[in-house]
Amino acid sequence: MVSPPSPHPPRSAGAPAHARYRAAWIVGRRRRLLQQAALAMVVLAMATWLWNCWAGLALAALVALADALHRWRSHEAVRT
Image (tube, rainbow, N blue to C red; front, side, top):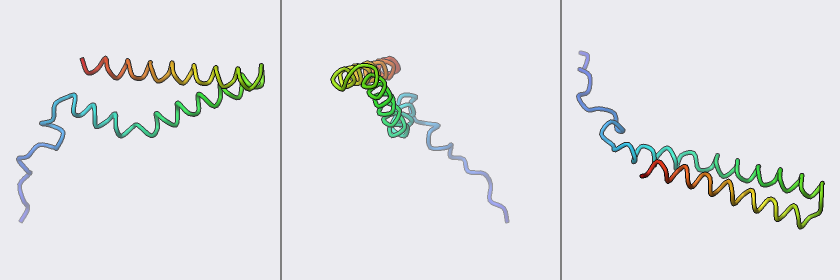
């Protein structure tokens, strides 16, 4: 005998949109952190090659801060 389809909707069907967004945001955290680290390392290598170690560190920190600020602002924009 075949059982009838379940009357219960999928788990995310009743969740608020923000809760689903938060869950997706948490799942992609590792990938975002790896992208930020790779970007900072590329800037560090290029600036060190062009100028010196201190300029490379300063520029890498500036790029990492700008990228983190951009990602935070785009994440917060969804909340409000």
